[in-house]
Structures are given as structure tokens and as C-alpha cells.
Image (cartoon, rainbow, N blue to C red; front, side, top):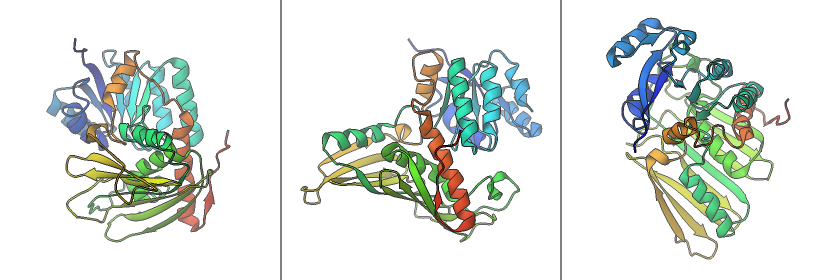
Length: 348
């Protein structure tokens, strides 16, 4: 029997508009959630979008939370100070789907995750997801079953053809949006590499401005050294047009083999290829995955199951979320200094 759709309110209509149109009204969220309200500090914008979709519109979060019929919140505001908004939502007895990056303050992020756990509330985000994507699970399975050994070198890349202008938003602020292409798109790579290698140790950054109208960069590279000795390079750009975008391609070189993830455009399905030391350059194994289930996607089914008590309410390793935030914090320092920055993994 098909479950009744959960009524969800969407907060933040800059990125939230994309979520509504591509995830809730249609897409992977539509079988599980029904748009019930919208909220934005720009009330005229909220009213316009609410009227378009025949749902109530609110200008502040507390008004939205006063509607007891809304059981879930999609929070798609900027990351700066998001933990405080999450606290208000979970204390009002609602469950939350939000987006990467989770927060800018690693300590506040851990506090709100721990409070949600105490309250029995669900907080999910698209990266890192509480449940690893199928292709990351497959990478781990091959790593163990094929005795690939330790990860040594990794390369993750994505790009999109942006031609942006300065608009005064947080995208223009290097304090709120450090190394912009990595912060906005490459965060998926940070979280993917943390899931494979564990705790990061230090970072280096290079970046440039090629065609953006914003004061923040549009072309960037982040190198991460992990405590296990592995080194990963994350490349992200807003300057590339080749008929594809958001590739999220990943190469992982282990001691005794390699795994490559390639994204197929426009479906965004992906394929894994496993190469072994004695395989003569021919893939030993391949595996294909649907784009809706790939790393960085919103797992609305898992979110709905968690709300009904049949899933994982919080990422099983909260430190994985915090590790990504601490990597971003170090990245911001590296952007300013041009130096290698150690990641502080011991903050209280």
C-alpha cells in the first residue's frame, strides 16, 4: 500500500525553488512529499511562489512552524548560521532535509546533530547522506573483496558553465563562500573522499577568476592530505562548456588497483570500472547506477522512512559531516594565506 505523502514546507527560495520544481513537484521526492507551504525572508517572493503553487507563503520561520499540519521542513538557506535555524525546527518537533555544506561552524554543527539525536528528530542532507550512495558502497565492497589495499591518490572533478554577475548575495562574500567553486560544488568531492579515506589532515588551495562577474573565484583546486597518507585533489570550475556539466567524476588509486567513476550526461547515471594490478589494463569489474541514487543526490525515500520510524534519523557517523566542515574552514584559511593549513580535528 502506498504511504500517504508527507506535507513539507520549503524554507529559502533561491535554491529552494530548484528543489521544489525538480525534486518535490516532480522528481525523486514527489512520491513521498507534498508541497504544503513556502517561506522566504523576501515575503513578496514567497507570496508569488506560494500563489503559483496554491500553498501558503510565510515571511519568517516561526510563522511556518506554527502550522501543525506541516510535518517536515526543507531548509535551503545559506550555510552560515544554519545550525541555529535547525535548532528552532527540531525543537518545534519537525524533521529536516537540508543541503550541503551543512554549516560553517563545525562545533555548532555537532551540537545540533547531537541535540536532534536526543530529541529523536531526523536531520538529513544530500552530502554526506546518512546512507552511502550505491556506488560508494560498491567501491568499499570491491576494496575489501578484491584486496585493493590502502587508497593512495584520488582525483574528483566537476564543472558547469556559469556566467554569473555580482548580486550582493553570500556567493559574493569570500568569508561565507571560500574558494567558491569548491565550496559550492566541490563539497561533494570532499565528502566522497572523507567517506573513502577517513580523517583529513591538511589542505592546499589554488584558484583563479576567469570569467566570473563575482569577486569570488570561478576556477579552483583543493588538495587534501589524509591522516592515512592518501592525497586527494578536488577540481571544480564554473568556466567549462562541453555539452556536459556536474560530472562528479572520481578516480581512486589504491595500492593494488584503481576504481574510476564516470558520469554519463544528460541522465547523470554513472559507471564504475575496477582495474587490478594484473588485469592488463582491462576492467576487471564494471557496475552501473541510476543518477537519482548517485552520490550527492537527495534521498527522499530514506528521509520519509526515517520520519515514519523505519530509517536512520542522523548520519551514523556524525564526525563525517563535521570533518567536511573543518576541511572547508581550513580551505578558507589556505585561500587567504596561500599556505598549507593543518585541519584542527580536536576542537570541543
